[in-house]
Image 1 (cartoon, rainbow, N blue to C red):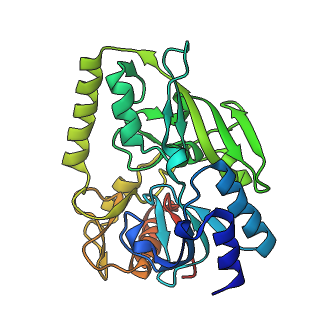
Image 2: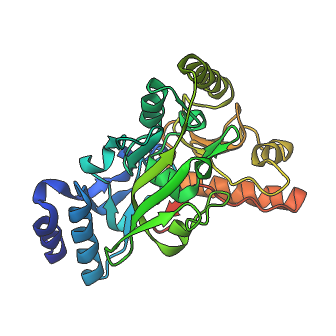
Length: 305
């Protein structure tokens, strides 16, 4: 038993600490090797204790979210993978503030969308089918179907690398296309506050159903993937560039450019992380060669490749 493992156990309890946890069980790609340490801090106090232990031991850490935008190498992650626990999954409706929601960073976007729909609040429909958490969505300014997190966020609570709490206004977040100051400064989201407008529940449900229908028809939801694999290059669509490069169905091992939507890289069964990474690099190279446009990954990549 390592000294660091014991420190993590002392900080948050042995039941919340695992070693050599397979990341294929925690990512939507269903690929990747083990995390050296895998911890589940229940609340902010425990999270701060984990960060302090990592700082003291000079260990790298990664906040997992829903694992829906992450590729971990087959060798695994050598540091501490952090999955936020139950206190980060609360949905609070502050009294006297209609349309305002305080969402824990671990709340799934799909759940948040259902909650606000029941309340007859509109503005969050776009996020219903994004397979991530509120925290991850705030970090990346997640968006779909014409909506983005920056349209509804009013403030975000974060911890800095030293475990200090900060409250950031939406202006301070510097939200851009799939980026924010949270990403740049290495902050950890603990809570997000958003403001929605009153709408008609029937219309909200109809819009959510319509977007779901579009996703089912156009996206390869039957296969493991991380959603849109590449960022949208300015003035182009990644999926169209990949299709026009003749790469529909292109395969490396069991990793494949989806035949249904070329913007998605899918795992057809037993793809390794190396298969996925190689395919992504090859696709970027071929598209650049043909169109002089470099595709950048939207998926986060961690570990040794």
